[in-house]
Length: 163
Image (tube, rainbow, N blue to C red; front, side, top):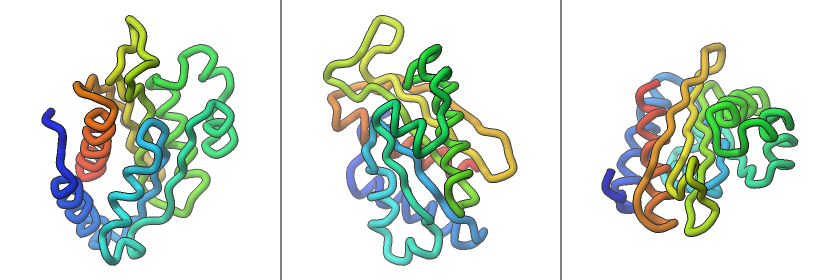
């Protein structure tokens, strides 16, 4: 996936906002490796208060547990960058907000922190609609820290459109 520009991210957020406004849905984000970039991108859109509820940045294990209800056992057994963790993050975001739709991201943006089984660029993204089942997908993005984070924001927004 090519690294999206600011203009491309804005177009994705604007398109998502149009759809969420029409369906009267509200979005919550739970972000780790993007540090709030998804929330920033959507709130750059004028009128986003019609469809954006809140964003939670949970970087540490402790924050993931306190803000999003991720279980300590999940983090111990699977780590922060895992399907299990992102599913608990996206579910917890809905529990702790007034939103009807959620996206969560956790990954290794680099330049350090990678391993053989989870190299730099590994990102798990989860999406969920209130009352539905979470969907999670793993990505392996190329590039430097900025490129990995930009690609993550774009993939999260595209996944929300698919909901």
